[in-house]
Amino acid sequence: MTETTHTTPDTARQADPFPVHGMDAVVFAVGNAKQAAHYYSTAFGMRLVAYSGPENGSRETASYVLESGSARFVFTSVVKPATEHGRFLQQHVAAHGDGVVDLAIEVPDVRAAYAYATEHGATGLEKPHEARDEHGTVLLAAIATYGEVRHTLVQRDGYSGAYLPGFVPAAPIVEPPRKRFFQAIDHCVGNVELGRMNEWVAFYNKVLGFTNMKEFVGDDIATEYSALMSKVVADGTKKVKFPINEPALGKKKSQIDEYLEFYGGPGVQHMALATNDIVATVQAMRAAGVQFLDVPDSYYDTLGEWVGETRVPIDVLRENKILADRDEDGYLLQIFTKPVQDRPTVFFEMIERHGSMGFGKGNFKALFEAIEREQDARGNL
Image (cartoon, rainbow, N blue to C red; front, side, top):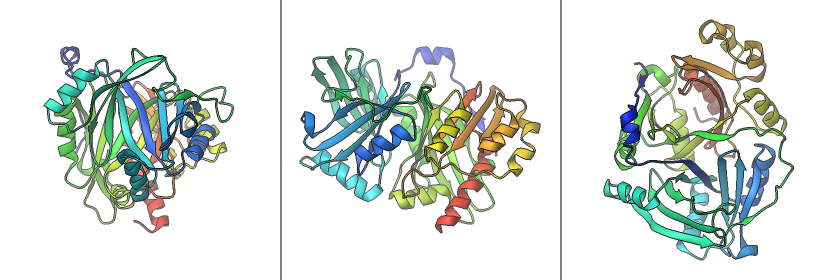
């Protein structure tokens, strides 16, 4: 089978039924938000910018907001559950471990976005409402997506505070690096159950007006032992991209099967973070203790023959175990971390794009064989 690329006419983009400004935040429910904030400050070079907790009136939860460029992560843990939301977060961590509960999207008009989504079949979780403080007003609403993940819709053009009302500015936990490791969220990947990928692709098509950007099926993402299928949906401007994966039948358990087993259901598998200097980023993150998937030297023996010339020489890619791929629009460089918690679930990708809007199709076999080696070491292949 071959990769299929779908393009969106400019006229369709101008008539986008669900316009977005981009990703607003990735919100994690974690067992210990203070420790998570420290880890992502030191290992990912992010900067703590805002906090909400018992010291400023939030008796139920503690939340830390970290940023790197336009990328924003929020880590929330329960101090003492007193409401349905607090109990949900506590139960979520118990059932799934640390994971993403919210892929928040910034939109120009929350009321219009929520109305369009719910009129087209979305389950509304929070109707449009205002949150305000001395820094202005934020409009918020929320809809459900796969698993226990939600999309909070955020309209913040009338707000100048550090994050949201209820949060106060916070000083960095450690001195941020002189050069940030990454500057944006490139895409967020969801894993769903066998047979449900097309259902969720249709959900994004209908409910958010997203279009199909790419799809990988059949032998596109397969090794001798395991396989998966993936389709990518995106808004009209490609600012928000959501690949959706499902397992495919193979001789052994795929990485998606492993994720679904250990996460206890569908959820966000990984976030890709855009960097403009992947070598410096990987070296700094490795020095801070981040573990990346290993790639055999044989991968690089023929890499130059098909990927061509890249900003980073092949020997430097080999030394740092960075992957490269080229398509009709250009090339990209990418690398994947190992899972960042004890459960083999959530991980990250660092990606440096040079024209290519792909997802590293040429690397799938090498990448998935590397993942299978890790699965085998865990006894889960």
